[in-house]
Length: 308
Image (cartoon, rainbow, N blue to C red; front, side):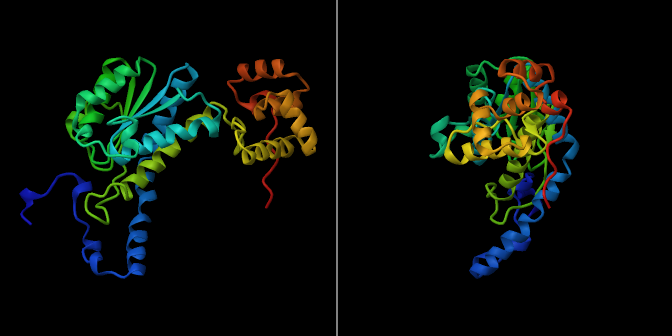
């Protein structure tokens, strides 16, 4: 193929290792896809410093009462919405704290909205509608690094004083670089099926998103060791987990853990501090507020060691 016909975006290149996949057996297809997927985590690891910078920016935003917003189209947009929607049950956050914006609106989560990703104005409008301001963090998700909707969202966010970031799987053009303060580019190489960025690129973006939100939530005290102590017990499984966490960290019976949680309004973190410090819920809340939400800074005690 003449060089002039090649798309500069890595995500649009053909993968020589899967050129004959149309003739492969089912087992061989599994092997080919799995072999390509093995390199995704390594690609994400090359962005260690950049991802850490994003975590620090999001932590600052959260501590100042600001928000994290994602903006993307197609698979990238859906991944942002997914990550945002998982934060309230996992970390006990208000749904407005992490927000996912997708080109075409919520209907695009299930049904592709043709042309929505091509509208830079649509991205800018989403930022305006969500009243983004200085102190917020807006991260664009664009596997190709070129999506106009994402560029428009970041440009509008930057003009409003927000911190901006971009997660892409192909080196972005100058127009995108100009609107992104933080650049995270795990280059995973050509997809198994040319241009199908729901595969390796999507997996890479999901790994990055997991790391950013989990890292920022840990930094603001949403864990005790590796225990999720700000989860909300919204179903039987989570209620059981909440009781088990209290039992493990306080060495009380299940009945006592249940009673302690009741006095703590169902809040695991509060229950742990109440027990450790011998105080009521109001005093435990004040202690946590003064310690930036971090249990260990209140109690000075590490959680029990992990059993072998």
